[in-house]
Image (cartoon, rainbow, N blue to C red; front, top):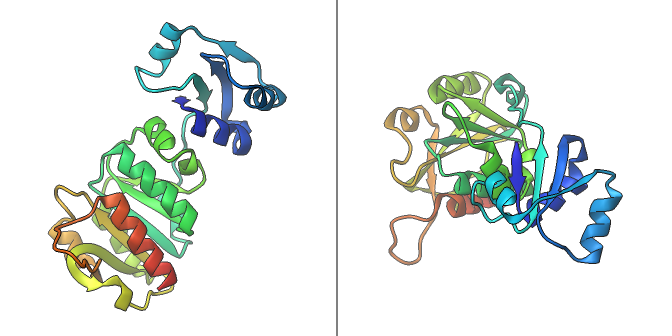
Length: 226
C-alpha cells in the first residue's frame, strides 16, 4: 500500500517502522530530514517526477512516498471490550474519516466502527497524518446488528442529531458509543430509534450544521471532559 506526503511519511518512520516495506524520495530534502531517513536503516529508492506521480496517482506527495503493509482492520468482537467507541454511519469521504480518526486518537476514543463494505485506507491514513494506524478500526456491513450487540453489553448509544439534547447537559456513561452520520443523509431513522439519546451542539448563530469532523471533535471533547 502506497502512502505519501511529508507529515505521514515521518510519522510512520518514527512510530511504525515495522510496517514499512520501502521508502521513496522524489526530491532533495534538507540535511536533518535526510539524516533521519538514513538512520532508519531502510534503503532509499530515488524516483523521478513521473514515477512519483504515478505511485501517488497524481496526489501531492511532496517528494516523500513509502510502501507499507496493507492495513489490518481489527475484529469487531475486540471492540466489545472497550469503553468509548465511535460509529461512522454512511460517512464515505476519506478526508472526514481521516480527520475523525486523528481527533479520536488524540482525545482517547478506544475504537472506530465504520459501516460499509470497504474503505480507502491509504487515503484515510494520509488524511489522518498517520493516526489511523494507532486507533483500532473495525469495518462492519450491518451497523444495526453491531449496535444491538453493543447494547446487550450495556453500551449507551448517543446519536448525533441536529436539535438533539445539548451535549453540555449530559452526564456521559461509562460504556458508550457516539454515532455520527453523513452530512448529506444523517443517521437513518432505524439507528436513531435504537439509540438511547440524541445529542447535539448548541449554536449561538442560526446555522444548520457543521462539517462532520468538526462536529465530532466538539461532541467527543464535551463527552469526555464535560
